[in-house]
Image (cartoon, each protein chain N blue to C red):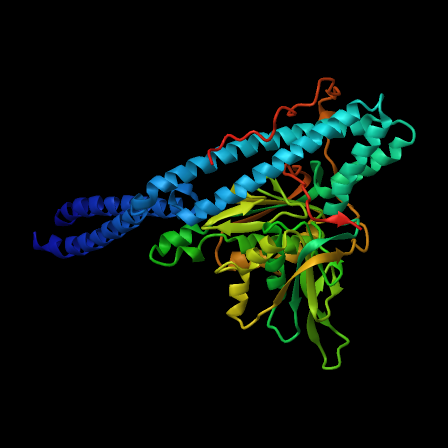
Length: 233
Length: 262
């Protein structure tokens, strides 16, 4: 009988500690109750906005596709060159889906690391916007011709940022795991990120995967191109 | 015998422990990406960003409707078609950097003595796009979706070697001047927010100068982008169903309608 006492005590102490910690984590989130009504309203507004934006983007996608088709078919004399020019400019701007040789990089939060060190700062285990920003810059240095992250096509005015601990691209929320697709020379791109962000993430034990693809498709940008202040000279 | 009797309670306790551990882990990961666990100011920032985006999308839909209409009426009215194409082309030239631009905005000036590295430049540019920048140049190099910011070594330097920053693979000389066209106050606010990029740089004793300007001039891209790997993807070619639209363009009905209480 006495023989149980010591191991049981130890185990009970440990489990008690975990229980307390977990309670702490949970109460921390329920502590927001004071402002939770306000937050609930905000979340409703955000979800309604996201829904509406999704509809708008789908509508824009359909309309751009129709426009592309018409412009691809209009082969009338003097306008032909102009239509061709506009199609090339759209491909350049990221308004059409594109296909080509490229790579897919998959990144995820280091869940295992966080699991093994539950009391450590979680910030050391999650993917931050700066990781993505640097990775994208390095892909471009390696000659990437088109890039998307979780289906969000990166265009000139695209931003990669965080609000709280959410990552936003083109003002759209994206969640881990992150799938970064890039069309270009696989060799050059892999070389560029291997000397940089990819290896840094690997060294920090983030789960990272890299795959080469022969026919990689990258979706079109579905957002807006509205300019109010810039005027051609 | 004794040993076996001890194993049962210990197994149970360890099992409970494992379950608790995984539960706790779940609680922690949920915090990382769920809206429910965000602070009010985060949510407010999101609402603001999304509202702005919705409004711009609505304007884009109007543009596209007009565009579609003029394309479809092209057989009757060629002048209108040309006008439409011209407008569309203008937008594309701005985003592709193929035309020089002018407009109000801000100038950021970085001197040689400031401890600013290329990732800071990357962050500043990213922050500017986020704050509503319409066009950006760094030292007369136009920034587009293909622009790169990096460092390089100068092999021919007198002291053996020195490191300098590059934009679009061109060496940057000081002072580095970042020109941005957009709403000057918004652009400035985007950089100087508490805890923002300027606060961050101040930690390293770097204080770039920000200047609001009524009229800025931003040059066009030096050379056009060439593509070796990427081609347009046309899903319609695969399933051979490319029927041209014959109906009226969608979305002309009051695209500015709001569904959100203000």
